[in-house]
Figure 1 (tube, rainbow, N blue to C red):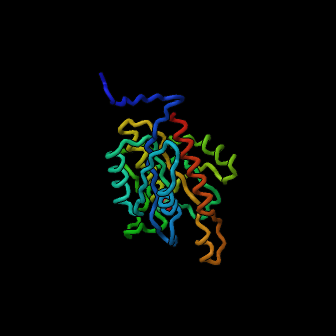
Figure 2 (figure 1 turned 120 degrees about the horizontal axis):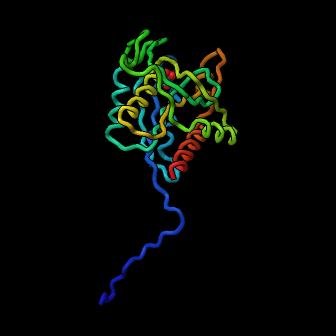
Length: 224
Ligand code: PCA
C-alpha cells in the first residue's frame, strides 16, 4: 500500500538529444592587434545558449611555450566531443576554415613573451602535417547559405595558430581520439581598420558570432 506517495512517471517522447561537450578557444591580442576577435568571440559566447551544446571556453596566450601546454592539459582533463580553435588572420576577408597544419614554426614577429622561432619543426619526430577533422565542406555550405563570407584555406601560416592547430590534432591522433577538431581564422574587427589609414578588410563581431554559432549547432546536430 503506497498511501499518499506520488510516484513520478517520466515518459520520454521523440528523439532523446545528447548534450555535446565542445571546447572553443581564442587567442589574446598580439602584434598590432589591440583586440583579438577570437578572444572577443569566446567571451561573447558566455551568455549564449546553444541547444544541446555544453561549451567550454578558453583564451590562450600568444606564447609558443605555454599555449600548447595549456591546450594539451585542457584536453587531457576533459572529454570533449568536438574542439574548435580560433585566431585572427588580419587581412582575411572571410571566416577561414583551415584544412591543414604543418610541422613548422617560422615567426614573422616575436610572440608575446619575446620569442621569435625561425625555421624550426613543432615536433622533430612528428609528421609533416595534420588535416582538420572538422566537417569543412558542410560548414562552408551552411555559412554560405546564411550569407556569411567563408572560405577554405590550405595554410594556417607558421605562427601560433598553426602551432596550436598542429598541437591539437597531434594530441588527438596520439591518443586515438576521433572527434571533429580544427582551426578557424577570423578577419580583423572594424575597430582595427578605424585605427589606421591603411585599408584592411574587416568583419563585425556579430557576423562572426552568427557564423561560429552555426558551426557549433552543426557539430551538435551531426552527433545526434
Ligand atoms: N593569430 C595568430 C596567432 C594568434 C592569433 O590570433 C596566427 O594567425 O598565428
